[in-house]
Image 1: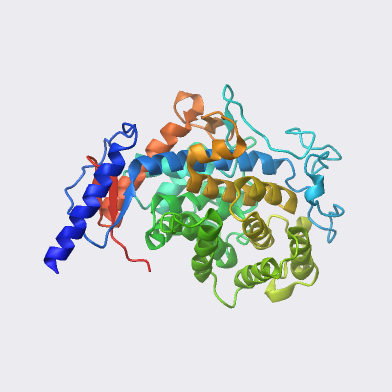
Image 2: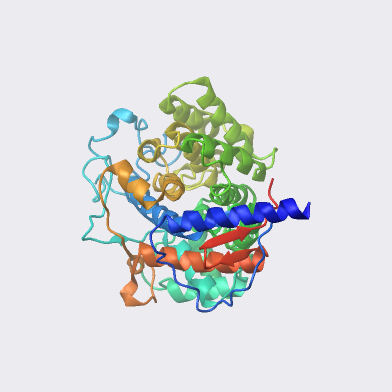
Length: 454
């Protein structure tokens, strides 16, 4: 057995060397605050190329920004006709390219991002603006590097939020995020900021927007990713909103464990089925997953599936989803639940195509920039920066303005996707070494990740 294990390890090393030699010279620098340790490759280790991952992280940021800004065009345009705000019939595929309709708070004025429902791009000579689907994740990455850790404490999360979020003007926080921030200003520390006893908004969508990146920080190890994301999620969420956020974190981590010989669609569907285990079988989030998947399997159109989601959950309040009964503003259009169901429509019917997934998410309704940003980021990671550019047939800006929404960063807040990806690699180096007890091979530019997930 020793001899076979040694031969396998030697073969894996040879493969890594050959793979590395066939790629361009590495642009990745060493983490100056990490002492890299010697590691002996094991036959059961998963090997992940750091250079490829660096390019995938750029694809994540680019895909997220494209999808986020495109989804913002229709954000809260269509939320149904129950409660204090009525918005008419939902969009369909035929509305793509047609005039955008006003959102629930726009007082009759369509989005200023685009006069029609279409993709929103930042050209090569411009800059992507941060938004609430990207800025807190950016902060968490910075905090992990600042404190030289893989797991943030509640105190460090509070310090980071108070340092980088505006206090007395527009701060781009809503519902549970805003409530958690208010509680932080009063001295509360996560997870108390997301406790239902303190935060009545705990079932809103917020944790999804801020924690998906932890899945990428723990490639192929959702157990580690969930541990890292636990406090950031509980900062604003509990119960279904927490489980839904864990579903997304798990999917992002499993993107590195999926069979790359399969089409992106098949990889995503496998990842979703695995991540479904985070949703308790008695929860409405689990029921939503099964329901939307069944509609896809029936072969009906995505519009019919979306309309049936509205009828089942907001009209009939099935499976314990009782937001309509509560009489919340806009029928809880920011809730984690209804937006999770809508997100699953774009996931399944998009079938791994980044363009179709973003289109469906943009047209599906409710808080439409959030599902789009989620899947645009995940598919962007899976196909990499070059894959995103190929899909759209064009180049994009690589610059990112974090200080559109957040404060206290170097270079007046202007960063690049390359630098953001570099920082992500540094975070993962520490995670692999200290949390996974794996190895970082700088010579061959690889991570050796012990497998505990089956």
